Amino acid sequence: NMRIVAGKFGSRVIQAVEGQTTRPTTDKVKEAIFSRIGPYFDGGSILDLFAGSGAISLEAISRGMEHAVLVDMNGKAISTITSNIKALGVRDACTVLKMDYKTALHKLEEQKQSFDVVFLDPPYKKQQISSILQYLDEHDMVKENGDVICESLKEDIFEDAVGSLQKVKDVTYGITRITYYRKR
Image (cartoon, rainbow, N blue to C red; front, side, top):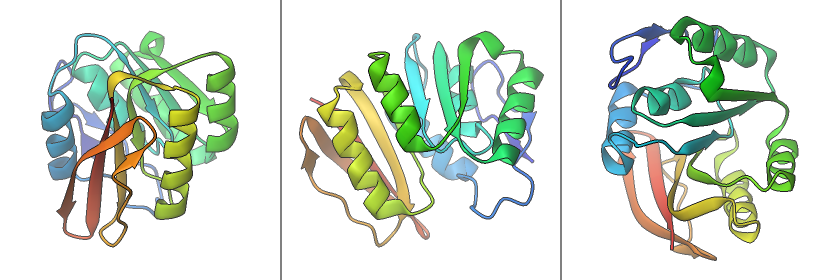
């Protein structure tokens, strides 16, 4: 099991996805990400495109974000997300989409949605992250001064800018690299 690190649900335990092959983002990395982009929010919205257990979105909501869109195509992930949302009583703050990321991006773009924070931790890191960054930029899906956080393998190095998304930092933790982009 995992826990919410800080905010109104700080130290509450949430479920991990059973039999998960990908490692969930560790507390240390989660803490570093939120210290950098938050640590607390005054409303706003997050898009979590490969949501897994929903831990990142629920952490953001705990820290004051108003709304999260959680996307995953795995049935076990969706049922874990749903029970975590229910356990914390934040159903109104969450939209859960069971579909692949391309379908989700398309749907959200058609609804003219844009986000303050986008979190990307896809299974096949590099090529997917690059094409998603391009899509987010082309369709103006990141709000002014919004953040895109990419979790990848340490070896994956990303471009300095993708359109109006500017790389502001990248940090490695063990085998993980976190790359931060900001919408300029």
